[in-house]
Image (cartoon, rainbow, N blue to C red; front, side):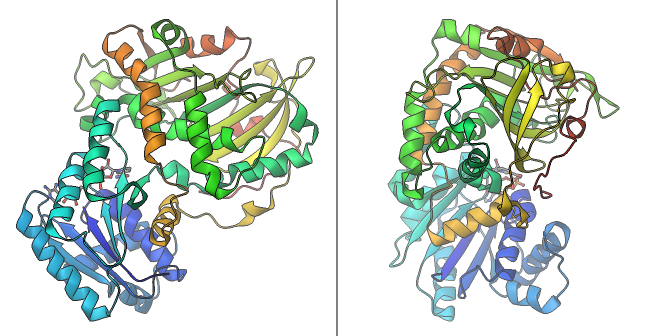
Length: 498
Ligand code: NAD
């Protein structure tokens, strides 16, 4: 791997501590960092290099995936770390930063390859990118890359504006937009694994799929993110990015597996084929919800508008379910139902592919993305109250024996290598906003009701009706049966812990 300087904005923040340092450390342990590597952490507080290094060490002890026991290894890792004070608005801070970056490059005798990782609020992205450009930090003989975290804009217009500004400083191939769902091993290998599964259950290749269900259910409420979440809602926080990326990753790989180079092109094609919703469609195909008070794992929890930092009359959505259609020859007859929400009964990210079958037994191909990972085939009663009685059959997926990597390890490694396959490309982001924008307008104009659902439920019952109208139901919404119970029996899942 080529030598590189990792310039980290927001080096004292939560994301850096919980995800970025542990991921970098794991890459170091696995010998996947460049052999010549320099990291410069930036923050507003004055810190000595030593204090910064010891803070990083502390975050490794708390959050690292592998045990931090060899003091020499940690010391060697931390040798690459330096700290610099920077306020994003102060131009002179960037000039000083440039000096430090160059000093370190000379000291280590490394090519000026620079990765700028913006682990800061999105309101700073444009200022930082512009200052990188104007200070000369971005004028390098080597490569330069910009890594940003979602949200990429607040709506279509702001996303375009943000992208326009970023493009003054970085070209599209230099911009790495992290959607951490794309870093999940199961999401990356979903296509390949489904192919193995379909090879085992060969008749499924040729049989019709009646519908697809993509769920990302959380049990957590708004937690400490009230300020951000109350202006984002489930539609911006989850649906526009993670959920649509899951849809793309699933539909591009089935039924034909494609090469890595084709992924971007295929994703764009799917997004362009996604049938847009007019006002009337939205009222029928989108369900908006907000959690009320209820019970999660035996504990009483307050409703959304009673959460700290949330306006008492907030109309923000904490749940969305939608029916989508892809207008292409393979998917045109298959409705795709997506739902995601907070304070739901169980934490799970799962895709269910339901096949056409005669009689009450339904064939399901199930992709578990989290908290457990696995793909399996299950024959179940269409009567949901009884779907746990049938013994599922399994497809063997050997790769699952690998130990699990955190999404950030994979994504940071890919960014250092210059591999953008599992990052969100601008076209996809723009097309996703384009598709979502009419729903944002409908929310704004209150064209669809905000349904209050009890915390600890599966969301508003209108989300069940969305499927019931087409003769389907959400699989595995058992009121009294846990998910583990529903999949017990003679199954050989190759799961690993996350
Ligand atoms: P945080 O508030 O914990 O940290 C923000 C960092 O930005 C701090 O280091 C702070 O010093 C720095 N900062 C703030 N204002 C600054 C200024 N004027 N000049 C220089 N530095 C300044 O936030 P976080 O949770 O680490 O999140 C960072 C980004 O990552 C956000 O965009 C967030 O949406 C995104 N994100 C976070 C998580 C997570 O798990 N924490 C997950 C996904 C995305």
